[in-house]
Length: 358
Length: 264
Ligand SMILES: Nc1ncnc2c1ncn2[C@@H]1O[C@H](COP(=O)(O)OP(=O)(O)OP(=O)(O)O)[C@@H](O)[C@H]1O
Ligand SMILES: [Mg+2]
Image (cartoon, rainbow over all chains, first blue to last red; front, side):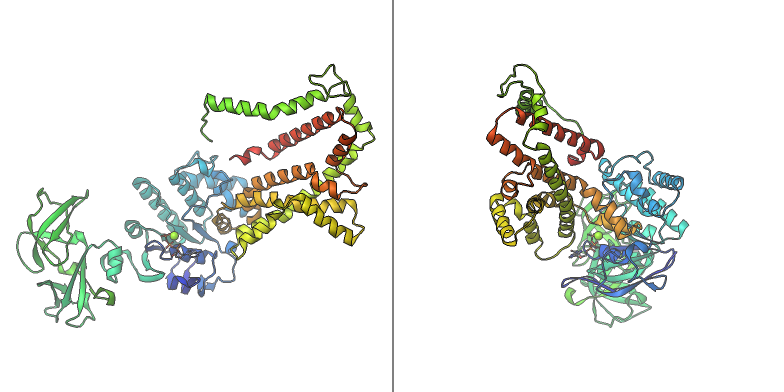
C-alpha cells in the first residue's frame, strides 16, 4: 500500500527530452491509465519510477519518501515489461516463482501461489514449458502473472494486454482490476486502447512528447478533452473551425463557414468574442434529424461505412470541413443523399485555436 | 521442442561427412595395435606393446602430458575470468571505443604465433631467468584469450538486458541478478569458448616449441621431438589415447552441462 508522487520529473537522452517536467500524484490503491502516442515517454517514465534509469531532474516519492537513494531491488515495485522480458532459461513455473523464491517463502506456498496465479491467467498446465514454447499472448500472460504474483505495493504495467484477443483481453482486464482492488495496489497502466483506459482506470493521463496534456477522470477525458489534440487522440474525428461571438441566453454563437452553431457558455469560458476557435464533437453524439432547427445543418452523405454497432457517415457540405456522424439506424444504401445533421449544443467542445492551427 | 525435419538426402550428406571426418581416426586407432615397428595398415596381428612404450620410453610423454594439462587448465581458467569480465563489460556498457577494445582483446588471434613467440623471446632474454612454465604460460594465456572473449561476446551480443531489470524488479540484488541472469545465459558461449581455448592450448606447437626450455616441455613438443628420431606406432598409440580423452571430455560435458545448450 503506497502513494506515488512524481515531482517535476524530467529525463533527457543527450539533447533529447523524453520526459518533460512530469507532475503526478497517485493515491493509495488508485489505478491510473497512461495514454499517449508511440515514443511519447511512457516506458521511460515507468523505468524511472522502477529505478532502472535515473531522472535528469525532479523526484519520485513513494508514500511521501524520496526513493532516489533506494536501489531498485528494494523498491517493491512490480513491473510488466512491454517486451515481456521473460527469462528464456527458466520454465513458466520458474519465471513466475522467481520473485517468491527471492522472498524465501516456503516451497509449498510458492507452489500454491504460482499455481493459483497461472490459473487466473488461464495457463494451468503450462508450468513446465519454456517461454520459447509459448505463443505471444501466452508469454504476455506469463509476464503478467510474474508481475502480479509478488503482490508489490506499486504495479507498473506497460501495455500488458496488447497481444490478446478481444475476449481474453476483457477477462484479463477484469482479473487485473480484481487483484488490484483486492490488494489495494497502486497501479499505473500504459495502454493504447482508450476503452481499456476508460474501463479500468480511476484517472487517465494523456501524454504527448514527454508532457502531460491532461489528467482527469475517464469521463472528463472522454467527454471534455482539454485540447483539440487530446480530443483527436481520444477518437474525436469531427473538427470544425469558426469564430465565436458574444453570449446570448447562456449560449454563445460560433460562426462556422456561414452557419451558426450554439455552444454552452461554460464550454467557451475565457474566449473573447471574435476569437477563432475549433469545435469538436464525438461522432456518436451527432445525429440526423427531419426538422430544421437550432444547430442543425444540411449536408450530403458522401459515404457510409458499416461499423458493427453503428454506421459511420462522411457528410460533406455542412461546413468547409467534413463531419462524421455515427448513427445506428441508417439504412440508405445510396450515397449523395441529402440529410439534416444536428449537433447537440451541450456535447460540443470548444478550443481556442493554437498558433500553428491559425 | 523443435520440429523434426530430415530428408534422405541430408542424411546421406551427413553420413558422408562423418565418414570423411572419422576415417583418419579409425586408421590411427587400428594402427596403434600393430605389433611391428613400422606402421602398416591393415596391421598384421595385435599388440599393446606400443602402449607400454608410452610409459617406458626415454621420452617422458607422461611428464609432457602433465605439463600440457597444467598450462592448458591454468591458462583456460584464468582466461575465463578475464575474458568473461571483458566480454560482459564490452556488451553491458555503452562507451566510446567499445569495438576497439573488443578488437584489442581478440587481436592475438590475428597475430602469427611465430611472430608473437619472437617478441616474447626477446622480452624473456632481456629479463633473463624466466622459469620454463611461466614462459609458456604467458604465451598460452594471451593466445587463447580471444576464443573465450569471442564466444562469450557472441552470446551476450544478442542478450536482452531488460532481463536484468526484470530480475531486479522482482527483488534480486545485483549479485543475485548477475548469477541468475547473464551468467547462466552466457554459459553456453563461455563453455564453448573455454573448450576451444583449452584444446588450442593443449595442441599448440609453434609457440611452445620456441618458448619451451629443456626442463619444461609440453606433450605436443615431446611427440614432435620423438617423431624426429623414431617413427613407430607409439605415436598412433598416444593419438588413440588422446582421442579417447577428448571423447570422455565431450561425454562428460554432455552429461553434466549439456552440450545441447550449444545448439538451442
Ligand atoms: N536509451 C535511450 N536512448 C535514447 N533515446 C531513448 C532511449 N530510450 C528511449 N528513448 C527515446 O525516448 C522517447 C520515449 O521513449 P519511450 O520508450 O518512453 O516511449 P513510449 O511512450 O513507451 O512509446 P511506445 O508506446 O512506442 O512504447 C522515444 O523518442 C525514444 O526514442
Ligand atoms: Mg513503451
